[in-house]
Length: 545
Image (cartoon, rainbow, N blue to C red; front, side, top):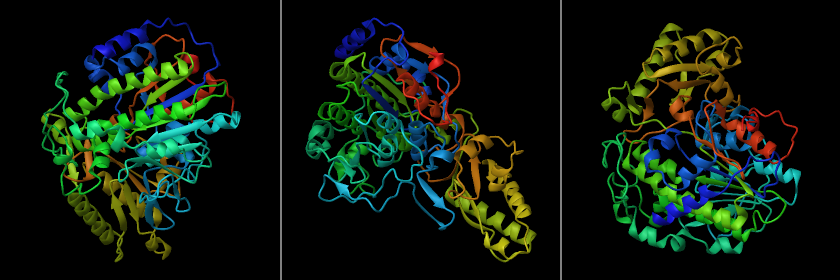
């Protein structure tokens, strides 16, 4: 830790002057920590002594930044922060979308036309940025200067691909079987030879062998439950240490080294190492053409889902990430130069606390299991069949995201769509775990003033999603498994994320004014002096600096 204390002292010693607007930078780095709640920066603050502390002390920090769409999931979040447009306009409304025309769900970035490159065999989903309807940050910069370069990397394909955008030189994501960063022929640039040899099996070998050990040098804090909470049950056993041997053998049967990367902080350490190799090997930030590097730290999400935000594991992840970030910033300063880059740190969404943890604190919170949800939907279906003298099912499909009515009953012409749909939404809202049910009728009704209607509209596209969208009661998890936690709602614990902008030659500043993740792209473009003919959903925050 002494090494990082010295590093932090050096970083904070840098004499700063205000950034001259449009001052030339050579590299823009965007880091998204998957599932990072803004509150972690304050809750874990006493133990942050390296990278996070440096950014909090020397960067522009928005303490009230939010996603302003309802379906706060990975794909939607990354597409939003990368484009400056809400899902309603960027085309990516969820990770997996229900296609109303086809009548089934599919991965939102599915593209069966692409083939993997740089690897002999890969069994991952074939995906691309083709479904993304708007340019990402790197696309705008490359459009302005065709000699600029744009790369992205993450464990998750959707994080890397959507942040990289439509014209990235290349996006990379993780294949657990080979522990290699893979890519496809969607990108025109040749897959680099160095990346073929850069595997987690080699680079992270010592960490994989040692396992994930709780760092005893840090104290736990009052908001942490215990090392083995009742609902912590993921791929690992719910207590430290987490090793290859402690995987749940029913869940992880092979590719254990790759699974270890997905389920531990070392996966994101590997992503940052790979990002540094991109800077060096692809010569990023070395000339007068502005380059872009997007980094998605996806293991944070897997850890958070399994163990929850009040766990030892999440605390230890951020303790370790604190130093990983410090190392990355130190290398940026060395390889690119401390005055030659802009760094943005944010997140694609937050996460709900385990309802059992909250209930123990006296807060109204519940876990509604899938069986109960299904039974309630069946009861509502029967009630409406009786009310409207129908023999066909009224509810065709239902899950935590929404309800799809059986539209064929309206095609027969004997049933009024508005009356049935409004009755159905009213019945759904009578359930104590449903805060709101929003039909397509509500979305299209400009006079509708239901809570969260703006966020619902910002998440909506007519071709995707169930006809009726559900918002759970605050601190309730609906249609869930027995363990773990999740996100995906417009509640503040899912929308409130960090937004940190590190500028060259600029002093740190805390800004409490509300900001949104759609503001990132127009702000960065203004800072680097690029004007585009786009009516972004976001606004330029630079004047508030």
